Amino acid sequence: MRAVVLSSLFVLAACGDDALLIDARSDAGTATPSDGGTSDATVPVPDAEVSLHPAIYPADRTHSPISAYVVENLRAVRARGADLRDDVFSKVGASATASLSFLHCFAGDRVDLDGRDLDATLTHFRGGDADGTTPFDRDSACATPGWHAGRALEGDPSALETEVEAARPGFAVVMYGTNDINIVSLETYASNLLDLADALLDRGVVPIFTTVMPRDDDPEADALVDDFNLVVRAVAQARQVPMIDFHRELLPLSDHGLGPDGIHPTTSPSGGCVLTDESLVYGYNVRNLLTLEALDRMRRVLVADDAAPDAAGPAIEGEGTTSDPFVIEALPFVHVQSTLFSEQRALDRYDGCMATQDESGPERLYRLELDAPTNVVIRVHDRGSVDVDLHLLDAPTEAGCVARAHQELRASLGAGTHWLAIDTFVSAGTERAGEYLLTVAAEP
Image (cartoon, rainbow, N blue to C red; front, side):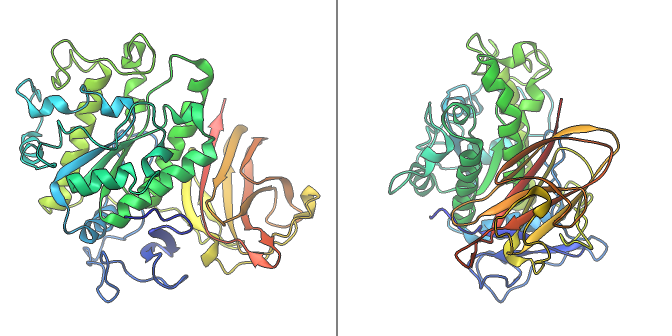
């Protein structure tokens, strides 16, 4: 297993209303349907009336959509790891994942599903052999207190590689961020999380990402939680893999379902796998339920071959050009794209911002429509040798530039139309084009 640093395993490239999976190991810029490893097979054809396009992961739901497109993407991933077990998952994370309160109790007798239709999934994974134990009560080699996401990929073999080769999981439950806030920058976190996602996908493991808890121990750290969780959403949407918004479910609870330290979840005195209303005010009980629900969704579509449970939903409109920009219709907005596949080079030097940098490489354009004045924070994340820059415009021209930055812009924008250009920096004649993650969020 390897971490893909300079290019992703799957880059989602817009193709009108539909999209293809681009295998980064094929020739750059050549879109080929991914069948999980071979180049001559085709993507399974869905119902003729279903338009396949990447799902948008909205902020108003706890489980990310599992549309027909997502299902086909995940089936292609699992086909890469045919030697892995569909009844095994691995835990990947820090102390809240290594804790005995997380999932272990599902291997025992103190389980109360409170009438939920999750018995088949509980039985399925209880029967999995995760190197001599069930995946529920396995002590993962890649769940260690104090770790940030980058630690999972350090070493040869890395802790992630060691865990995957020992447990042979078809799935991985992933949560990093609580420690990362104090250790690494947001840019490094995004890069690490993408590397981790790509390493799992490359091996044929489906990651299930989880947003992190509030940081009630530290107001300054808590102020960064939304930013880090937006990266989680962006990475999950970028790779079209499942995401659990644990943070969303904790916010309404007393003390956010956290213990006296303000960091770690609490557990019901009745047990962490008692999923009654009375127990779902405790953080670990909530996380255990959400994780079992996510595993249930995966078992149904990837093991039982059920139909996708969610409709296709809207697509991100546009082609990323001046005449047909990507449209940002709601905030928060996250998007993965690559300047590598763009043929547009209409913007070179943004003299409206008094900029002298050579941005003559390919660019992607976005149009943002605001109904009311809004404070926004805009971030672009790239990796490795990729170097793309962010430009805020009042018109899609070089003279229309009003602000620029390498990674982050904050602005107070009026109601109306605004433009963003993600442009490729050219260094010593070399275009530093490639994949990026864009996030746009409103601020108070």
